[in-house]
Amino acid sequence: MITKVDYVEEYIKHPVLIKEDFTIYFQYKDDYIIVHCDVDRWSKSVMNRLMLDSFYLFKIQEKPIMALHDVQDKKHLKFITRMGFTSVVCEVSTEDGNRLMFQWEGI
Image (cartoon, rainbow, N blue to C red):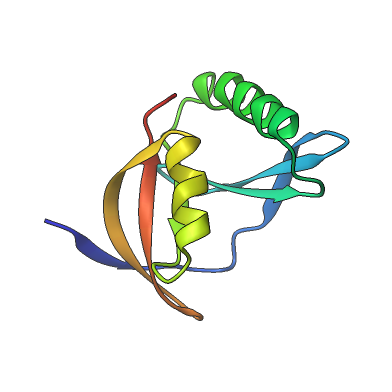
């Protein structure tokens, strides 16, 4: 059963990994971390580096890693699934509408 929670934007996104082609940000919550990612240049090699770097980064965290997904964005779903986000935890109400929260399970 998917529960519904409210998302509070007051938490700041902190850059935790800055590379030439991408930046990974963490938004620290009480019980979990929401991850965000900006990719400046897409290629197969950039995707491979992003997957490898994020794997090691996520693996050392002491809290679950989550990603918010807009259900209308099919490319984003493909991206987060490939990155290892597989379990839908809950539905989240944001200022931009409802999103699904996925938990990272590894790649």
